[in-house]
Length: 211
Image 1 (tube, rainbow, N blue to C red):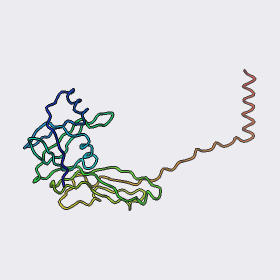
Image 2 (image 1 turned 90 degrees about the vertical axis):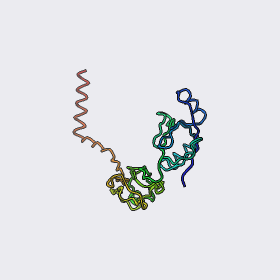
Image 3 (image 1 turned 90 degrees about the horizontal axis):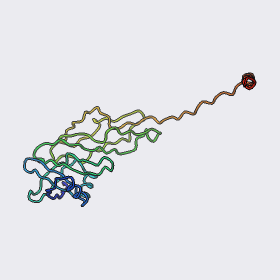
Image 4 (image 1 turned 120 degrees about the vertical axis):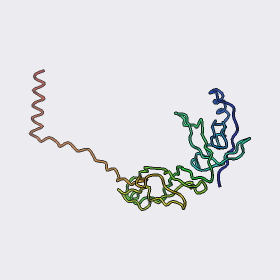
């Protein structure tokens, strides 16, 4: 079931007006497509929930005067320092046409290599797929419990639902288990022999006499 997100139409475009909008807890955005093109504003809390749960999925955008439309979020702009979303773009889609989308990969299980001291390294957190909108999965699970130290799982290890085609190269690595880091103790300096010690002492005495 697609998430429904309510939007308000906006006439603001000046930077001062957009700042005021954000201070009210609304994020400016746009929707574009064959049937609707409009400047909108989205409740920031609702948008953050969407970004947390399923940012790449199909959702229904409910807009005054335009009605409900199936869309995908295509771009977000964020503040450089705080990371707060300050603008969002939506693209209207046709539910009868295939779409390309990014789907997150969720790792399950604890690798055997990690239990033996190895370190799990996640290389990719998502993959790109193509399918009908109704077939788009929220996520793809990958069981990593069998991974040994020095082994990797590639994109082709993912099990795709029927009707979903993978666009990411199958040989790309998703996760690996690295060998544990071995800390080497600093080498101890050998104690000088008695003869060497006497030589050092004589040399020091000579330096003292010269001064």
